[in-house]
Amino acid sequence: MTTALLISTYNWPEALELVLKSLANQTVKPDEVLIADDGSTEVTKLMIDTFKTKTDLILKHIWHEDNGFKRSEILNKAIAKTDCDYIIQLDGDCIMHSKFIEDHINNATPMTYLFGSRVNILENHLSELFSNKNIGFGFFTKGIKKRTRNIHSSFLAGFYKSSLELSEKLRGCNLSFWRADFIKINGYNEDMTGWGREDSEMVVRLLNNDVSGKRLRYLGIVYHIWHQEKSRERFNINDEIQQLAIDCKLMKCKNGIDKYL
Image (cartoon, rainbow, N blue to C red; front, top):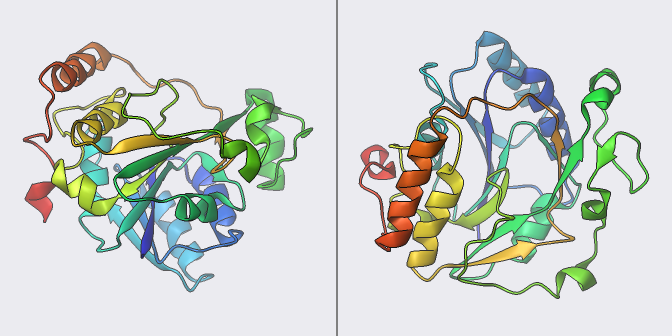
């Protein structure tokens, strides 16, 4: 099984730098790294180019012009650029636990997607975080909340089973799936622009294809860096698109990844 780590980003190179630093600290490395860039400026490109000089990993920077929140589109474009069997996805503001990739790989099973836990780094800790470039967080580390999610335990994780129900715990910043399953549903729905529901709507179509979901509680941990909430002006529209996929049991979308393959 070959694995691609997919990182979405937009104009926050300071956060992405810490994510890439945590990538270098992984116990198991991916076969490829895909950075899905939704129109960042040259500063982000320069930071990525600097990281490339310090790693032997295959890293592809997929960029398109900034035309609003087009995360679904850039994720499709990035996944179209790899032939890896398995995609592990996170956002460019989520620092990885050292066993993040190992956990996703070890728990990958056919006809299943995985979604992991997210520990929150608090706003008042950001200055220290960026000045120290910290990527390690213990249970009692200051500046985090939801710290029970920071318990790493294969034993406790074993109590969680797969399901064909859409979980409220699902977050696109910590998700993995088989590329073949993703292609079958035609990937992300690019009718969904602006923040909200793009990940869960995609997952609804996976579920409609009998791909079950399993929560990686106590495994696959990321540390989400606080930021101001994005505009929700498109949320109701996106919510309606997701509800249509649920009500009509849609198995694929029309405006998806196929145009890039």
